[in-house]
Amino acid sequence: MALTGRAGLLAALAAALVLVLPGRPLTLVVINLVLLALVLADTALAGSVRQLQITRSGPTSVRLGEPTTTALGVVNTGPRTVRAVIRDAWPPSAGITPRTHRVVVPAGERRRVESVLLPTRRGDRRPARITVRSVGPLGVAGRQGRHQAGWVLRVLPPFTSRKFLPERLERLRQLDGAVLVRGRGQGTEFDSLREYVDGDDVRSIDWRATARRESVVVRTWRPERDRRVILVLDTSRTAAGRVGDTPRLDHALDAALLLGALASKAGDQVDLLAHDRVVRASVSAGSRSDVLPTLVNAMAPLEATLVEADHRSLVSAVLRRQRRRALVVLFTDLNSAVIEESLLPALPALTARHTVMLAAVSDPRVVAMAGGRDDVVSVYEAAAAERALGERQRLTALLRRRGVEVVDAPPATFPPAVADAYLALKAAGRL
Image (cartoon, rainbow, N blue to C red; front, side, top):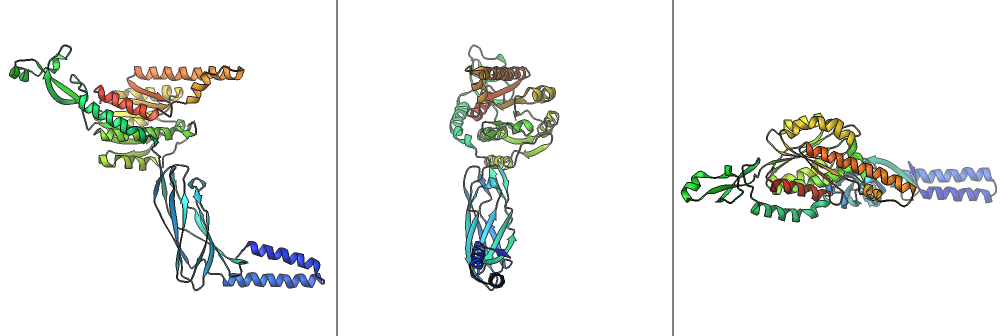
């Protein structure tokens, strides 16, 4: 049984009536009996909640920040009309509006109600339950029950860096058409023949073609297509730190999507590995047309785990995954304790077999703090910021001496900086 606001209003009026009428005890008994009779009668006449069949429909995925619609189909299999208030309970991060619906469903008929979802977080969002309150014809009381209509809405990363893709694709086309790598560099394939000019590597001379043409001819080489790019996401505690209003992991996802889309257009095979102490997600290269949807779907449920990263386990997972030379892009943070104590000891095994790039997003607030000199507090903050910036520069130099390409950029330029570093490696013939 469920009472409505109208029942409360009647009870308040009855209390006022008792105060003004004579024979208060008897009047109170009569009024209470009348109220009870109204409540029982209204409950008895209310349509059955149990005889409702509720189903859910709508999209199963949506990009973060974009609205979508979920619909409830309500079928009344009972003999009475159901006048109901339906509350569709979702987690707050699903952003559902409206939460409740008023609906009248005659016996044997069907109604449909819709709500708009505007999620504020990535991941899988599931509705908790559907609460239905069926009110009697008097609107005083009714019946209440719960229904389950299972559903999973996967909220995908927004891929805001998509706007940088056309320019990088144009540079990639120029690179494929104009850049020739002179020599038998690692990760190159034969392109064409041309006449020898001063400065060419003598090892590139094609002696058979030279004999036929009676002039010195060299082979030109270009970066190989169908190389492997492994995107490695660090999902340990450092990925939970926020830069602005966004976790570091989300910045990494955006940059990884841009790089994955660019690499697939370049003809490279793209893999994904998310790791902290264990593997959290793993995607193997498939059809190039499916790379972006596959990456987005695998990234959607990823969350940072509050544990320390195990880089030895991470390196082992990468080496087991790919034996041929590949580009390994590690999205992590330039944290001195993590880099020096965990990553550097495990790094030689990785750099010996693969080209390694480390991508870290920097906090622009630290740069702003470093320029503050207005008062005593800002001076101390500036000193701390300068120390933090100096530590990042030291780590960057240390990693580069170990043969690691390092990208350290603020959120606004982080995704294109990672893509540009990839194109630079291709232009240099290192892929």
